[in-house]
Length: 418
Image (cartoon, rainbow, N blue to C red; front, side, top):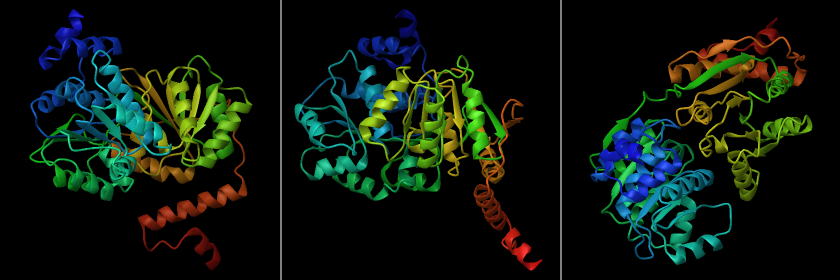
């Protein structure tokens, strides 16, 4: 406890928080925590630009817990808004772990499940609520949730909120909570939409940017392999998962639900799991159970679309494999941020076909570094590209060339002229 106390002494946390920090393994504050906690404790409005895996959740949760301090009344005094159910659950779990030795009442409210249980919890009294905007408004408009005691508002993953079209709902929420409050905004990137949002509700904020914007986590080794087609990608996955010692807890990301299901079925059929798959067509309970099993080490492989690239907080993820290159380039940062967490070394492997090279170059420009390209191991069987897949890739390459050169008329056009 003595070393924990000295590491966190600058923040004047109480014994309950310090004990919880020790149990959670937070030996020393991270950069974002060192910079943000004193500002938030002092009542300053803050914009935190921090990549995933830097400890930003604790950077705002710890001072919020110190502000609300102990259970009081029945209505929430602090509100954290997040874009997805998975993130709401994750932050609630994180907050409960840090508030373990206090009597603070913390809950997550989100859609995708019936509101009955959430309403019952609200009725018993809560101090800190973590919510998705839609469900929060639904319960507020039904008069099941009173927001007039909110003194601290946190918008987390603000960039994703803007991407998902939450602006209208956020404005509604800002109208119904008390005007006199402390506002905090956390985001992995700071595009124009987030900047405009910050101007709408933050007063004289201090911007804390702990890493250059849109850089990938430095402790993640990034590799790319040129893999010509879908069938060869599957063969490569089989090759990688053949090493059970190195590939012990693996996250595989795909762009589409159909690809996610197909990759899952293949891994399951080849007995390379245990494996589960999560995407937006899966029920909420199925998704939560799969993520919990992955966290607890009961799963070796979790296959997912980008629905969970920001919603999984698991230490010990050995590798992230990008089965497809993401076409929303920020998603690459969030995907690979699932490994190399809590100062551990991680590895991110991206499988790239010819039509995805365009997107890989855009990602390299975003993260301002080259991703090391390695040769496909000779043991991997390189399959012939199917005609339908070859046509899809050719059309995509044509589209990319037209984007680069508006006068380019396409390979198909040239063939017709001949």
